Image (spheres, rainbow, N blue to C red):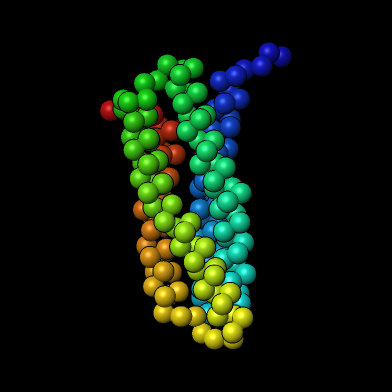
Length: 158
């Protein structure tokens, strides 16, 4: 059996897309559930795991996706600056514009929750304000990732 480079890179690209989508959904789910509990210690612990998951999984996929996507486009002969590939890149940058602040916010939420838990105090107003921003930023980023995956699968001609 001969090694198929394009197949391997495509497989890596699909795995990366799954990791982005799955980690994004999982992180959102666990943070929302922790928030609903209203317990600073639960939130602090969950936020710590969320920050780690973003570092290990999301950041790795964020690096892998453009590399494998560019390799695929080159090997298959797709122009990066036309059609669905261009729209995927635009949406990827759009997603990143929301993801980068979210990562910083998650670190702040973790710190604020640990401080409140350690002092046995309620979560401060700054925590709640940042959480609302975090929550609002998640929707456009997640929808953009869904749109990118749709573009990758359907490859529309526009």
